[in-house]
Length: 352
Image 1 (cartoon, rainbow, N blue to C red):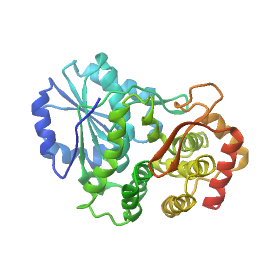
Image 2: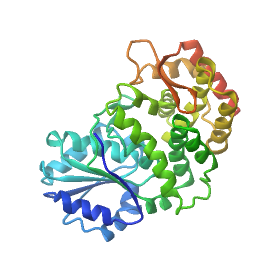
Image 3: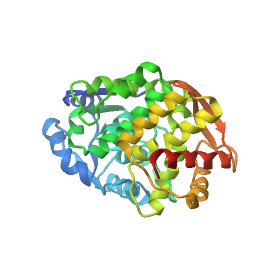
Image 4: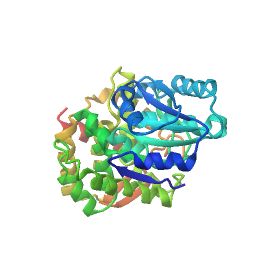
């Protein structure tokens, strides 16, 4: 289930990979943003040999059946075969949806992920998970099928807004918490406001390796891969609730807010150290602000959590919690009232 991951400042590796695969034809999936910001540079540097461009609207609210069907339709109408290749050039929305489209078209064609966001590089594009949102729920439909390779071109991150950089950094914070004290120290000392692009590849490699090692042990999320869901049970509920309210919140921000609540649960139920709890909260508060909620929304947030994919029994919500940095407790049952307490703690922590 492994996939080669390369972090680079040029596109020579992609050129070599295309020579190895020798696809019958190449399709490039982009969204409206990456078509403008990233595609021209890619086509300038790499000979894609009569590539076909498929462009979908930008934004996570477009990661659904309509966009998926459009990609399938374009592949079909433009002559894709089992020997075709799909390049997914974009953030997590593009690599998630494109990976799922490739995995299911003609029962599966090869695809390569070229993440153009920090979030995509450290999370969505690696690990083999693909999927779409469905029925108002994040990543409800999908398969696990690794890309042929993942090429991370650091230069693309220079096109990102500060908000999008912070969104990706949230997953790096998570990787620090679930790995070890050294990685956590590096994350705490990172300056996301003033990125040193010469040092960024090393920081990226360290963060991505956390996920790679876990995925290698448990590729289909039967056990320890659930560690990667830390912060996501409540984070996804925040994200879905924002959509219901007609708002758009970046995934990493929702995960950051979710980590505040889930760190509290870790402290209360697993003995997570109080000093690290407040160190992490301080780090998150500094960069992510707050998602305003009231106690009147707690029941709806709880209902959204019941749809989390980690849950194995109806009406029982399972969390990934921590007893310390790198000490993960998967499948931890948390009662409704405890979740409400965690939401109270979140509100108090961010000053709502």
